[in-house]
Image (cartoon, rainbow, N blue to C red):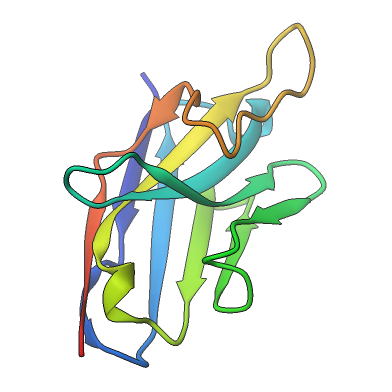
Length: 129
């Protein structure tokens, strides 16, 4: 059974940094097509922040993340990261790791849609002014 476990969330002041980690277990990382990060504020739809292809490392960023957030991965450790710099109060949200497996139809990555097969439980990020 696949598990995505996020860590690294917490409370920081505006301008600070956090690095989120997502460890994949129960599934071969090499059988994943892409992984990503979403965030959600209560009462709002999840927002796709970034995604990365497990093979090749091609990345995508939302406008709100570009220039401040960086996605990366360590395939050997089955971990995907989200480095977040210059955090702002509006970045306060629950952050979720997502993953999409390789399927017979080809390398489709749902980002920025929420149609990923696998979701973590989330880690809270709170940014104070």
